[in-house]
Length: 64
Ligand SMILES: [Zn+2]
Image (cartoon, rainbow, N blue to C red; front, side, top):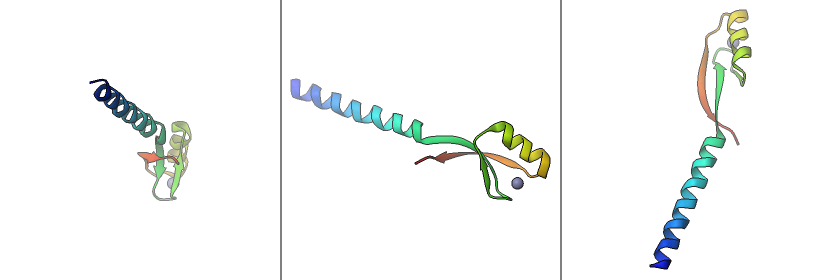
């Protein structure tokens, strides 16, 4: 029984660790597909949109 609990604990820890990693490594950015530029800041993305008249899309990306 004790061993079983430990195993559950371990599984739980692994799950939480992975979840944190996933949240940490995913980031929302704004991307302009016409110039292939990505912006981390919404203000900058908005500025680019106004200056160049390009459409900027919000995308989720993996950060390594
Ligand atoms: Zn652009």
